[in-house]
Every structure is written in structure tokens, then in C-alpha cells.
Length: 118
Image (tube, rainbow, N blue to C red; front, top):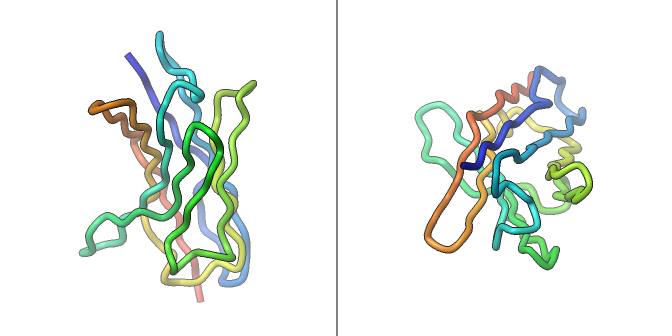
């Protein structure tokens, strides 16, 4: 069993920064064991969208809307992935979810709210 717990969300003014964390736990919850770990977000009345992803080898990819502003990283010792979000915009307001993929199995966190005021 694997659990993903996100933290770090909150209210910030436009132009500000936040760092989200996603910590994995459980019998087979090693961050290094997942083929891909990713951050998604879902704004009200919108579909969930992929924001950033990282392969087991550390390669990252970002959506066009956040490229250059968001950075994904990981700490193997802390079994945690991070999403550093800079130059935040009101349109970044959403619930942010951490997801991890191993073969056909996927795991999701409960989400953390990010609200950016103008």
C-alpha cells in the first residue's frame, strides 16, 4: 500500500511563490520505485491538467503554462517530491495533486489548495 500526502498549499499574492511537497509512505512507497511522479492541478469547473512530471531517472517535463516558472525536484532521503512555484498568477489557482505511476498502477494524493490573489 502506498500513500501520497501533499502539503504546502495556501493563499499567496500574484507574483509570489509557494513550494508544494508530496511525501510517499507505505510498504512499497519509495519515490525511486515509481516510473513517473507527477503534479496535476484542477481548477473549478475545469478538467484536471498535467503540470509537471519527473521520471525515475530525474528527467522533468512541464506544461507550457508553467514552464519557466515551476520547478519539480525530489529528495530520495526524504522520500519526497517538490514543486517550486514562482511568479504565481491568479490562473494558477487550483487544487494540486501528486500522482505516482508504477506499471499500470497509479497512486494519488488528496490534493492541496493553491489560491493566488490578484
